[in-house]
Image (cartoon, rainbow, N blue to C red; front, side, top):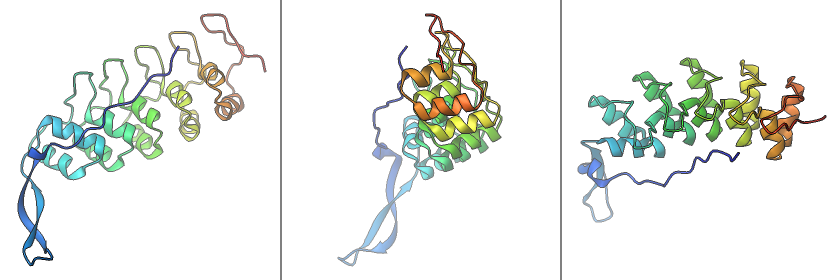
Length: 212
């Protein structure tokens, strides 16, 4: 079973989102320099801004009545994108404006999965404070603990375990987080799971178990 990928193409804010209409300082030529003033933000620009952490564009889109829960063709929302990138201010604003923490992308991943994939503890804490389920599963029955283990985020694993994550939960292949840790050579995480009481005798669907 492969690790779930999280790569996305780098996207750049469309120039149509801004218009140079206000000045702030004087250039060397003596003429006022123009700085961007955001007049209108469409859905694509909003989604790009979430990934880039452009809070001003996010604010403009939402202040104009934009829907914080719009998504792309793969079901990814602005909250998904900002969660994996660790843009905590954007995450806070989206949550305050009604972003749904339970929306799923096409693979069934919620914002909590994306946050664990990105490895930003502050984002994870913010999502939890809004009621995110630390044991939510995607289409492959992977929990946030599985995701954090596969991506090697020790601090995230520790946080999940200390906040009620089910340590022995098995995904569609029958793997627990410990199976993933051993398979991917995440030795520190494996030790942490064992110290936290994971069942080392659980077999996955190919009857593999760990002997310690």
